[in-house]
Amino acid sequence: MVSTDGEDAPTRILGIEGTAWAASAAVYDVTSNDVTIQTDAYEPDSGGIHPREAAEHMQSAIPQVVEQALEHARKQAVAADNDPEAPIDAVAFSRGPGLGPCLRIVATAARAVAQRLDVPLVGVNHMVAHLEIGRHQSGFESPVCLNASGANAHVLGYRNGRYRVLGETMDTGVGNAIDKFTRHLGWSHPGGPKVEAHAKSGSYVDLPYVVKGMDFSFSGIMSAAKQAVDGGAAVEDVCYSLQENIFAMLTEVSERALSLTDADELVLGGGVGQNDRLREMLGAMCEQRGADFYAPEPRFLRDNAGMIAVLGAKMYAAGDTLSIESSTVRPDFRPDDDSVSWRSGETVGSWGGAIASQTVQGAEATVTVEDGRVHKQRHPRSYRHSTLDGRLRTQRTREEARLTSEARRVGVPTPVVYDVDPQAGTLVLEYVGERDLRAELTAKRVRDVGRHLATIHDAGFVHGDPTTRNVRVAGSASEQSAAGWASGDNRRHEQDERTYLIDFGLGYYTDHAEDYAMDLHVFSQSLSGTVDDAEQLRVAAEDAYRETGERAQTVIDRLREIEGRGRYQ
Image (cartoon, rainbow, N blue to C red):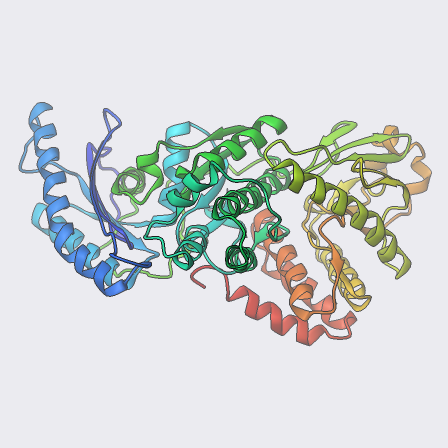
């Protein structure tokens, strides 16, 4: 890294983007906050992206768009009485993730311009740029970020110098998943707008819906959509249902992330964010839970150099630049591998843990505490199709009651279930603990969780969403006294050192090591998103799982495989 500390704030930054489809260059005028973008996108004749063709397109298009952007910068310099021979202060380029040949062409162009104009280089993480442009334009301080693009799908939050992955796809990016379906139909790229157009005249048909904690998977729903069309279902109906389920999955995990972090701001990034229905769902969810939502205008959602230039300006001002020798590209550059130099102090949400009022809004339910009992209501989610929503609320309420009681039967501390009405989506449970685990993250507590998960796995079922928000612990005697209004009997809790599992709504019966490993993966990700240094806690949880579980090593081995499936691992 080359330090630029002490230099004046930048006036103009050139951004160059070329991770896959878009050969793009932009000039960001910091003073006026004006962004001018030049783009020449690669469009294959058939099917999806062809890496060789994409690189050939990049080779011919990048010099043209870069020169167009530089000419615009020179005109801006003249208008501002600056030297037109020195129109920019730095060159920012997309360093990764993306297709290696395309990235190398972009990096070569960026180095050439930087050397010719004698200005610094800034290497930008393409995915972080998708999120930072929304934060920049919205004015939000520290939102949860959903990235929904062709090759990626992540939910992230900023904590202690990095974006933390709170949830992500376990197989393919959301845009690529939709494109696989449209290629099956023989439609040309891009498939997303065509699905959106056909969905306007469709009706709902049942398709898989896969959410595991804050992770999700698209392979099952893609296979089912293809089979539905092949079986005679109307293309319009399948397109409609595909959108309804996929975008509801993304919206649900975004809501779960807001709940986990106690955040009240959400920004959207990525090319799939241009879809009207996705933005409508996210807006409706945020409105229902009292959060703010922002989606950038479409030119900043699809791949573009404008977002590279804007983030490049922030990085340049923070002294985060590269020497020519260290400016190698990173095709597997994950967002959580990027050190965030341009932000400090703020952290997404409050990351609290104690119940602050008698009514709490969770990820998909409202919880009210009265006389030592928890009244839980799964209200209809306005963003989901009513048929899908009704099925999920009934199913999850029934499974929560059943598995909460089953876990208790096999020795795992859980609340007593007093009453359940699956059709109404209501439960009445015992009030347990005084704080969420995220407020008392100690090795002892996470070891308890590791043992509890091993116990229920040996009994043949999973929790489904074992985050630090879905584990309850007893507080100190003073905390218990302060919470007496909720428990109705402080003495009942004075010696309670147990660690409770709650909210089994995403749980199910299974004997597959894959499903057990996903429980551990969800818990591990929630630790990473909740505490600054999660590694020791993850090790403690896994050690306790090994000591307890009958198939522990098989499950841990599968966990290692799952961890390698995340995008760009």
